[in-house]
Structures are given as structure tokens and as C-alpha cells.
Amino acid sequence: MNEFKKEFITFCRRVVSLHVIVYFLAGIFALLCLNYEELFSNETTSLLMRPVDSPIVAAGPGLQIINGFMMSLYLFPFKTIFIAGKRSWLKLFFLLLGFSIFSPQSPTFGSLEGIIYTKIPIWNHLLSIPECLIYSILFSVLLFAWYKRPKKAWNILSVIAVMLIVLASVAGVLAAIGALGSN
Image (cartoon, rainbow, N blue to C red):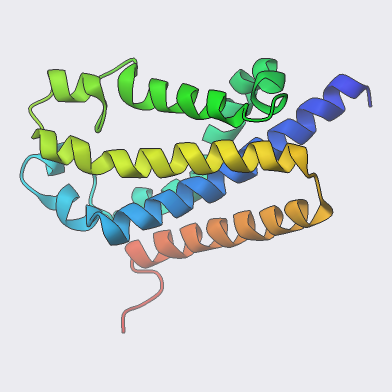
């Protein structure tokens, strides 16, 4: 295998696994600390957001493998920018934050565009910003750290974590459709 392919596969594996793990952690934080269950069920937000017990929402963490792969495709050409310097993780952090909150291509929930163009109360938008901050900082720092200190343990832990998240996602779908029975 040539060096370019090997480098891309390594980058892709790291981005996909970190995206899935960090997305899951930020989502759990939002669900527990920002009360997304109540927020998504209010009259205004429920028009846009599915309830947290929806089968497709339960599938979301496992489906993040696709998003992670797409991220690896568009971040790979700029990889050295995010891992070369002492604090180069900040560049990735600000890039993620910028495209998530300040310059998204549509009026998304929790973005400046969403605040301007949607009827969703500003408080609902502001509530989702901590989740975005947590995701952006963790993803950036962990990707940087994985390149600065590549250890086999990172690989093993990431595979185990992604497998557990995918299994939890499948279990969530099965529970949401009633396939696991009720207590």
C-alpha cells in the first residue's frame, strides 16, 4: 500500500472514531444537562426536532460513522495544518466552531443564521451552543493529541468505544420500536 493511502486510512479511522465518540459524549451531555428531551418537545421546537425517543434519533449515534467519514474526506487535505504546530488544534477548533455557529450554510438550530432567520426563540438557540463547544474542543484536542502521541491504546479504546456506541444505538432503535419489550 502506498504511503498516501496508508496516511489517509489512518486519518480516516481516527476522524471517524473520534467523531462518533465525541458526538455521542456531547449528545449525552446535552440530553442530561441541557434537558433536550423537554426542549425538543416544546411547541416551537417540536416542529423541527424529533423527540429523543424516536427510532431514528436512537440510530443517530451509530449513523455518525457516515458523517465522520465525510469529515475525514474534507479535512484530510488540511491535516498538517491541524497537527503540525504546538497549538494547531486551535485552528481546527475555530474552523469547526465557525462553520457550526457563525457561518453555516443554512439557518440551523443554535447558529447565528438560525437566530436571524427562524422563529425559534433565541434562548433555545443559545442552549445548544454548549453542545457545539464541547464537541468542537474535544474533537480538535483529541485528534491533535492522537497524532502527537500515537499509541496502540488509542486504537484499541477507539474501536471498543465505537462498537459500544453502535450497539447502544441499535439497542435504542430496538427499544424505540418496542422490540425489546417493556418493563
